[in-house]
Length: 488
Image 1: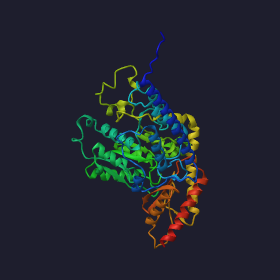
Image 2: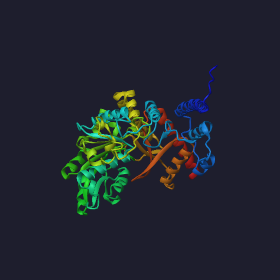
Image 3: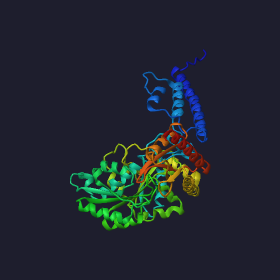
Image 4: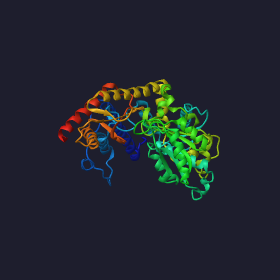
């Protein structure tokens, strides 16, 4: 009797689905490759801009009752890419991230492919050891000699870690007893510090009014004397300062606070000293710019965001503390034996020192990138960005149509288009900026300085060249001249 093979319909369907997924994946990779290539072309619009109501009509954002499968998903990916901002485009000069880093991109793909969480060594053995290696390497630049740290969701969460540790280290009882028995606390920050410190103050229970803004000098730097004076006034108002935060690269002007001077005040008064290097932290990779961080070895904690200047896809932020053991002491809750077990490798578990339970792998993309370019390559890349900022500053100064709004301190170039006295210069430059965005010619942001509204050009993409700066300046001036004709 012949054997009869009965096909398993479930197995056949599974094989068909797998084949369809593989075919779709190949098409998506083709789309991605085309997207990367097109984004790098100077004539490709940085965005196909549509107002929210127009985009809502153009695309179907509804969620279907019946699924559309691979074919529909492929179309939706195409639509997304059509209207997404091309942050790798040479005309993208907008936020404190941008450009395209190939090794980081590969790391992001593998991270999504393996889909693990960082809370224990058991579920993320390679990733946890990579993170440990990277944190130790990053700490080596601080001059501490020891320390600990963790990757976070971004600079805002990193700064929150600092505020939480500072509060708990100063008032050990607060971890168990809460904030009700505490005095009115205060943290001293630069008036140009990041808004995350206000959010952090809200989160840890000291409120926005507990954040004391300290005046900066004419170069945007918070100095030691100003901190000492603000501290004295804060104490007179009945508040108890427990922390001071220096900024290594302010968001608006790229200024570096006088870390060493501020350390003098912090040590004299027993304040936790945090340095927010979210923006400028990566400049520490260059010996040429390490003097900007003078005094960092005296600080208690440090934030550094590789996704801002090291060509790493969002997000990749590191928080580090000098006191090895303070994070576990002040954060660990000891009530999750279903995740954290007493076993030989538990010392490598990162969950106990994290504010998050589930935490994505951000170590792989930085580890791959660091080894791809090497420390020497990274040094050259950040120095090139400084050179581009210097070149852009020179071009602004040379132009009769532009004026420099602030001395270029690092990677931020603040300027505006010059208009006749009868034209509102702030409104004009704001409109000029939006015109460039809406036409897809350039994406650049603005901020408000003492002298008024400033276009804020940030140079963090080392793949740019001086020709890209020339093109942006040319487009900006041409758009300004056209707008001026319509205005006057």
